[in-house]
Image: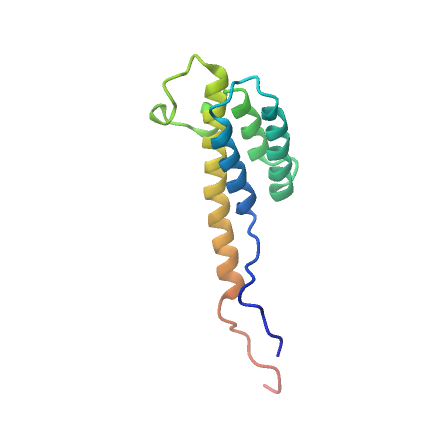
Length: 130
């Protein structure tokens, strides 16, 4: 029987999104013209493409969030939007965070279903004559 290292935990796809949300939180206090925003957006879009594919709707939603135009796409309630609606760069940062958190919630649900399916009870008959 193969032994499994119980100290090893597989890296989940949602870990990459959590890391991006953490980076965004640290960047939120920076000015809107900070050059790391472009690099951050490229990195985030690459992560989303790797997880969901190049043409998934989440990539489009994230692109709209970078422009501060994601309210209609992700159905953000007015109460979830920060009061600085006139400040488009800050609005874009807030919407990036909201879109990423929404995607993370969906991804965690999918990963939980996958984990349950992979670790579920085996219902097949044992090999041998029937």
